[in-house]
Image (cartoon, rainbow, N blue to C red; front, side, top):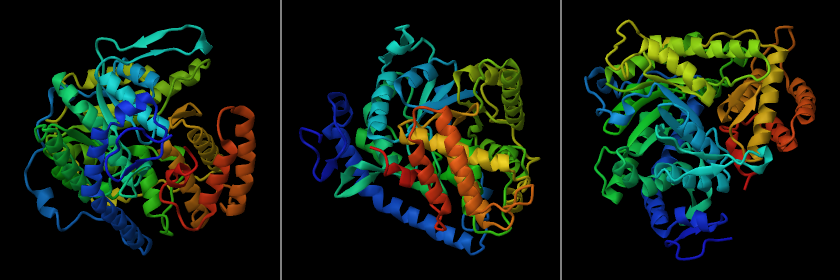
Length: 533
């Protein structure tokens, strides 16, 4: 059903519009979306073309380095704007999708902030995108509630408590479109669509309540992409008559190329910046993607590539040093573990991994960290409370950290690559994609909360192992297309035998198609998006 009532000129919506959805998709809000689209879409396309051109250079053997043309930014002294009061202490941030129950549980979890995710932890069905906007609108106004389903027979009513987390939505990345909305015949950017609707409906309300419009910005690959965001922020604030500098945005450093431009990204966003975040899973995916054609590049099983791997350690420490030099928050990465029921020993081992991870981050100088499950909030908070009794560690400089381009590219470990690791990648890919195609973007798999980034690592590793001379199992077998397809069939049967809700046959078919194709698919969510409503 198409929207009834007056649509702005040359704006079209193909998604179903309920009366509730119409409250979000108002003519005024859509005019705002269209205004931003018309002004900035050509620049987005230029930046995406620049990504593609840069990838060709990497395929030909080029390596990233710190930019000569922005040396003055790195070497001069400047700071980002002072942080708003409610972003000064972000010791534990919880992340998750924007469905109603998750929003309430996350805001009530005891975390400092909630990264409400329209991106990797969300499947971008039309329903999920607009329903998420409704849920965040209601959360801002504290009118959100949720009755538990009749299935659990409790009939419990979930409501916000008195001490809720600060809300920080994450719009989609620059590479994603919102296919259900076109302006002048072209689909709008998912980034602009998600940002614009949330900002339009909530910015003034948030300010009236003593907070503000805060955002997380995903998957940027250069300071030019941050510059685009900054220009959009300026235009958006002008449109609504809100003071420049009101918006605050934390940039995720989750691409290897962005790691070489951390100073520059902070500089571009400096009047709107709320720091940088260590986006570990996407970062690993980015390294595999960028250097997939390099015959010398290879990474071991995903389970072996931890934050203590040389290239990951260098990136994390450089982020802390860079942020604190500029007076900006340095946010730690995701603890993907979730509580393991009915196995106390395994559960305690998982929780200890979380403690050690958070201890490393807080002693490195991080000002906060991420968890994926409410049960982990108290554990992360305990570690940060002990080692960071003050609100943050901005004053802690790291003159001892000196990270070179070589350090950022020290890709280890290369071994082992095992059949178990290969099977795990296949199984995670099938399970995650199967759930994603069924509308769920945040999926527990093998006691880890997986999102799109881990499925991206899984399929990219296999793609690269097949094509790399180093893609050899520890038993001597080469990872080949044939071996992959044999194990895929085997793992699909296991998944279907143990899982119920999910489009697993379609998931396996898509996983096989993009892994077997010599033309590497930049993001698996691009072809997958064509398979959902």
